[in-house]
Every structure is written in structure tokens, then in C-alpha cells.
Length: 237
Figure (cartoon, helix red, strand yellow):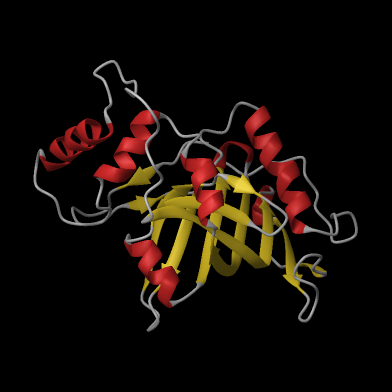
């Protein structure tokens, strides 16, 4: 599916109509599983195992200030558990500061190659120090050093980051061949995970003539946090 553009004027770009979306899926509220997390597992596994989706774990994360000013960025989805979607970041970053002041977020997965998308809205919660430590220690050594070296979202001079990275390596005894002299690099207290606990999840798959399938799950108010109930409905494309 190639995107075609024209330039009708020097200061304008225009995207022309492109190839029709075609998917074999036909989602219905009647055939959808009771939980959106189960439906997500199915689609995510297919996106990964199919081998045609580039970086299926990449997702857009949108946050907002208390006054409603939004910001968005691409982050990597790292875990799905019984409560929601997990990603990791620096707790002093812009996204974390906004989540601390306004604990609501939106996620979007877009798998262009298979004409599928998943949209998630929910509240957020920080992971425990134990959960953060378990994941941090599973990361490559260079990524651990990088977490200590980067003051995420802060203005930095050219060459400063490389210098900070080198200092962290020296601090924790990282050899030139990329090995620790002894022990381990501790998990920074300013770094860790967030979990997006969904209140709404929408599954979209592209269809010809823009008659796309859209199935939305809405969490039923008052249902259990551990075993929530969901209302499933079809949306007009």
C-alpha cells in the first residue's frame, strides 16, 4: 500500500487516495471474547508470529497536563498482565511528570502491514520497586548504563551524553569489552514502569470502501478490579 502525494503549491502537500484496506477479519460483539485483553493477546501474537509487521510492540502513548495540553510519543510495549499494558521509562521525563499530575493515558498500536489497530484508554499506576528491579536486571548492560546516564527530556550539549555514559561505566566497573568487573548495576530509583489499566479498548481492522470493523470494549462501572466486566459494542466506521 503505497502513499502517493502531490504538491499543488510550493507550501502544500496533498495525500492522494491509496489502495483499499483488505482484511479477512470480521469482528462482531457476538464472537468477540469477553475480555479485551484476550482479544489483544490474539492479535498481538498474530502480529509478532506473522513476521510482516515491523516492530509490533511500538505504540503511541498520549498524556496530558492537568489543564489538558496533550503530548504524544512512541514507546515500547513490554508486558501484558491481568490488569493492563506495561511500559518502562524515566520517572523524571515529561511523560512521567504528566502521568503523575494527570493519571490518565491513551495508547495506540498501528499494525499497517495487516491493516489492524488497537486503541486503549485508561488510568495509570506505577509498578512496584520489585517489578522494576526484575525487569531492569533483564535488560542488556548497555541499556542499564544508558538509563543511569540519560536525564531524559533535558536539554543536553553535543558530546555530553557520551561523556555521562562513560562516567557511569567507570562508576559501576564496566570493562571495555562490555562486562561488569563484579556485582550488578542497581536499578535507578528514578526509572521504572507504568501500567495502563484500561477502561476502554477498541479493535479496528480495515475493510474495502472504508467500511471498517470497529469493536469497542467499555469497562462496566462498579465491576471488580481483578475480574472486570465489559460491555462490547460495534461502532460505525
